[in-house]
Length: 191
Image 1 (cartoon, rainbow, N blue to C red):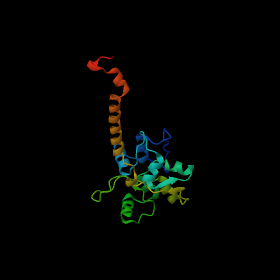
Image 2 (cartoon, rainbow, N blue to C red):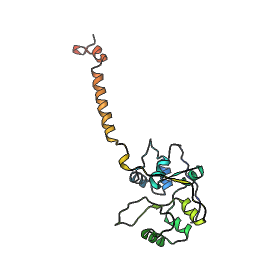
Image 3 (cartoon, rainbow, N blue to C red):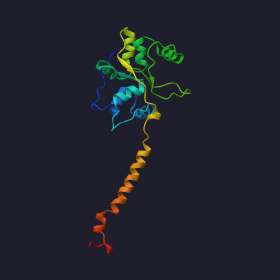
Image 4 (cartoon, rainbow, N blue to C red):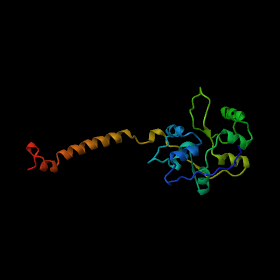
């Protein structure tokens, strides 16, 4: 397998965001992991799409400051094998440095379970951050933004309950409307 320092960016087919397949390729995970990761990081799927700014904010706490930075963020995330090859640091050393806090490159994000009883899986990095550190070039123009905490999200359940109650009220109004009065007669025959 050859090592590629650069990967083609994932350009969404629709400007509103990534489809599940595009999200899978961006994260570098199996299709069945996408929903669990989105739920864990509170990346809401809007009309079947994952909006890119929300993905970047919730996973990394960053936003692009210009189009060049946006292009770099669209590059698929990379795993520890790629980081090991790019930095020349063996994977076992990389994992040990991450655990001990001695890792001198970007820490990436742990997409998988954070259970201390299990070994970490699914750690991913933005390749541009590793690449610029290795090459000694300036870091991309990313703005720091805080992820949206779960407590500030609007509750969906009351909305659903309100819609159900509204539908029941509407049905009751229709039954007692003028039309039902005009067309309903004793014995079920119109007058």
